[in-house]
Structure formats: structure tokens, C-alpha cells
Image 1 (cartoon, rainbow, N blue to C red):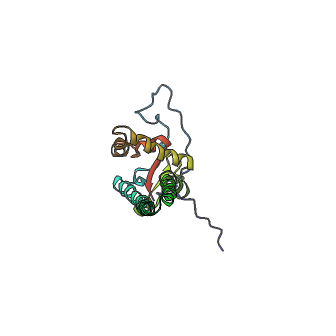
Image 2 (cartoon, rainbow, N blue to C red):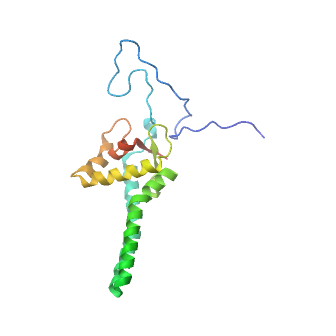
Image 3 (cartoon, rainbow, N blue to C red):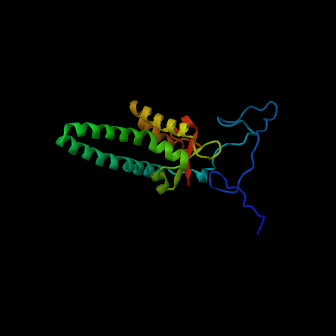
Length: 189
């Protein structure tokens, strides 16, 4: 039996694990460079090769939409059939449908992202959601906030479109607005 222990993996999945880097103060009299971190400070977040591409992100979103909508459509059809045959049964099935819709929209994505780092659609497309600071899974609160801000932006004129397109020009982490709000990033799984 060997005492060799494999070193921990980089939380973003690429390259050897990196020791923590502590910020170095810039030389006296030197202003910070650019709009990012001041000169001499290490950059936080994943390397560019670990970031998920926009096509995989879109595919994951479409798959998750299907995974949510297909069962809800089935429940809706059952509800309509039950309501036409018996009004009181239709009310009960309508309540079940509404609760199922609310649960699917509010808890599927936050639960999956906080527990596993990815929803079923993201897993199929090979991407996951991670905290920008250390690559770990989001907390349930952060994952829920990420979903809720998506819904809020969807109610604003062009807000939903701007939210999802933001990752096309965002540098360096290709974050959408809902990622920026909770400091998350979408990386390759």
C-alpha cells in the first residue's frame, strides 16, 4: 500500500492545482494598470481555456427549457382533460399544475446548480456553473439569485435579450448579467 496522495485538482478542471497567491502591493508611485486588477495583483477566476463557449451555454439552456416544459405541457393537458370532465377535480389539478410550474421555475435550476454544479442540460452539454472566486459550486442562495435576476431582467424591455447576449462581448470571463450579479462563471465540466 502506497502513502502517495494525488494532489487536489484545480477547481476549474484545467492544469495542476495552484497554490494561493497573495496580492503584492504595486511599487510606490505606480498607478493601477488598466480597468482590472492593479499591477502586481493576481487575477482571480478560471483561465480562458476553462470557460464554456456560448454555443454550449445556449444548447444547455434550450435543453433545460425542454426538460421543464415537456412535463408541464403533459400536466397541462391532463389538467384540461380533468377540468372538462369534472370541475372540482379540474380545480385540484390546476393547483397541482401551478405548484409544479412554480417549483420547476424556481427550484430546478438553483437546486441542481448548488448541489451538482450543473442542470441536466448543462451536464449533457459539458458545462457547469461555478463561483468566480474559487471554482466551487454556488450556494443555493446564490443559485436562486442567479435565476431570479434572469426573471427580473426578462420583464424589462430588452433586458432578457441583453442579459443572455452579454457573454458575447464580456471580457475576460464571458459572463452574462445574471452571472455578474452573483459572481458566477460558466466553465467546461
